[in-house]
Length: 301
Ligand code: FUB
Image 1 (cartoon, rainbow, N blue to C red):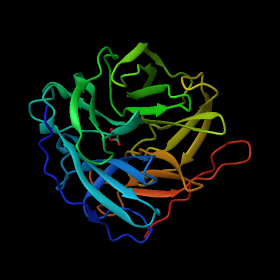
Image 2: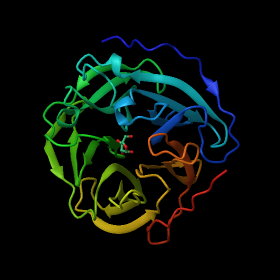
Image 3: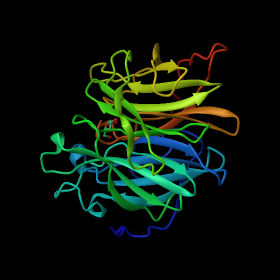
């Protein structure tokens, strides 16, 4: 299906390297990647104002930077009306991710196919030759599990093999993607021994160690925890909490290395004071010599 979104001109954000990164609209669930053009990109959900709930989230924006201080709003890349198989009422465009392989960018997003949204989650895929424009929906990934298919994360390993993760409500699944990046090879499996898993899976690799980060269930104030492994699909060893509560009921983050430094991207509700009107942030991530992640210091304006 053709992408019907308007070509919104890119907009430089008046940022000064302080949090939140974006104050023009409300954004959440940042997935950060460094692509071949040398820039860092953030793919984010968009909380719609006035806040009513996650049913109103119906579009995604992309942000880019070359210095982690000046950020550009690259504009909107997909909205629910672009998705022909989606829920007739739209909405519910939850935490996305993006991956790159062989000249194509694959944008993964969770979205229900029926009015009964909570029982019809799918993981859609839109593709483009560009990191921040021209995405066209290609349908959803077939044959996944039948529960909370939210918060997809796609990790491409150094050998080019790609892995998908998703999950919510206490269960996290992982599996290997086929070469087409839109189907799963041999099914999904449970990612075991993640303590108090809630949602928001993110996988990255550093010094040969795979890290799986996620949000926990701490009541009304989720934290971020992590586990490590020597294989992208586990078994995982639980390591602990590395992002304490942000003041927001949900927590959702991603980790990326840029120009020699590591960063955690996450969201809080600093601007609005409301959990349905969130704002994306970034802070440095530091590791101990043995690879453990140090607790992130949350900086504010
Ligand atoms: O933004 C909607 C949902 O809230 C995400 O999918 C979850 O991870 C949480 O941040």
